[in-house]
Amino acid sequence: MADATKITSGTLIAAEKVEGTNVYNLQGEKLGTVDDIMIDKVSGRAIYAVMSFGGFLGMGEKQHPLPWSSLKYDERQGGYVVNLDKAMLEKAPTLDAGSDFTWTSRTSVPSMEIPPDRTS
Image: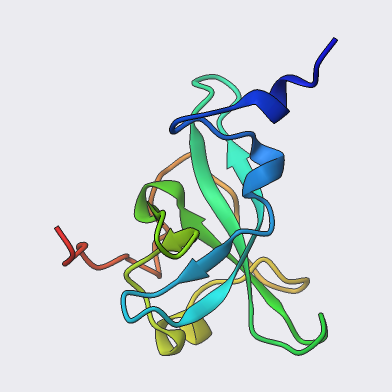
């Protein structure tokens, strides 16, 4: 039997293919990559993307929860675009050991409100 995740097309994509996808800001600067997706067990909806940011060769990287709804896929760049800049990410909550971040099924991160998308 064929692996079902290899035959996705159109706007449907397997979660394993999202992992490793680059995330850019509106200026086209690479901010990081998607490490994981958090899915609500009851609704089946993607709630957060976990993005790695900063560091060098995996050292000093931070992981940030981004509301899934804040990511827009850009076919031209082959990655997701979010209305954030590096300075905002540096101040945003992280998932690193010692942080006080708590997962919820809410679609916004309290101390990191995503500005409205200005590309529409």
